[in-house]
Length: 83
Picture 1 (cartoon, rainbow, N blue to C red):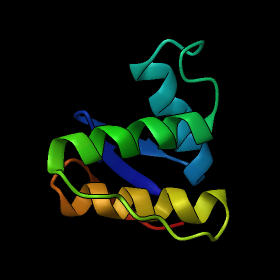
Picture 2: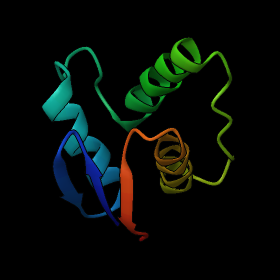
Picture 3: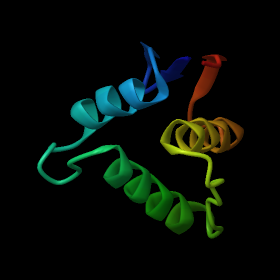
């Protein structure tokens, strides 16, 4: 998978990209894993847009792909390649 976010390109597995974003943007102690990152992004999205970020129950990589697609639709990132 390959995305552009925060004026940077990230490439790798969905989980690998999330870990890179988490390390770049947060204190790792506050957001300890990919699930914590997803929870934080969902809460932030819901506050900013006033609607729920519904993610399918298809495993961690599937939820991350769906989250990235929603964020792309909102204009917050660009997906260049899907895994």
